[in-house]
Image 1 (tube, rainbow, N blue to C red):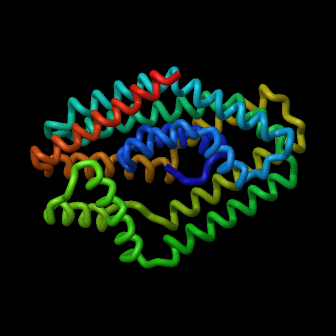
Image 2 (tube, rainbow, N blue to C red; image 1 turned 45 degrees about the horizontal axis):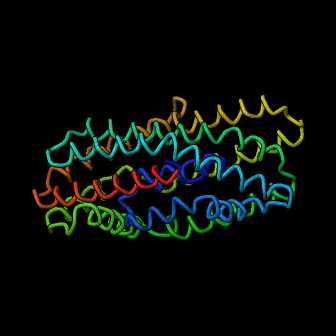
Length: 294
């Protein structure tokens, strides 16, 4: 998924990623991050938009309400997803099963994005030109960092970086990987269709689309209902890109990811699969406790 999005789409994804990608962190870290979501997210967003005195309390309240909604409505659904993953983990899986699970996660992320559209519209309509200029500067900084990290490195360097991240993520889930499994991951990265320049071009295009949309709201004093419809259309284009090269690239990468996940999982030992089940059970317990806390 592209890194650069409408700020409230990114905000919505934060909650989903804290949960759906929980395998990246220890359970205690997940629980702490989830409970502190409003405060952490406020400061993250403020770095992009530099909220004024009138916006600050509204944004904080909206973030707290979004978390409360997610705790009531989405945590039970995520628990069900984890239970489904537990049922799959002891056996071999197919790429189709991996993709079906990924599709369910994307559905949950989209639900959060749609829920955030209402407060996101109010925030978008309240932004002034100085804040849009701050957003441009933040985009430029992010782009420079991405360029330094990915575009100024040759394929061998960024493939090594991706490989290290993938190994770390999978060892947190399965435990220590065998040399043959590490070699499998290395081959997958080397053969991947991931293309940093194409990714960068798309994220820059979306940044410009966001800025143009926000400036149109400002210049035309767009009514709230019309602005929300425009934001909703943008959210859906992110979730399901229109036909064209980017959609084809995204779909190819998704299929690649499903094949790679199935291949690695099917190479794991019984002990590694037991470790995966224990990890999933721990996440289920954590999410159950978070739900009970509401």
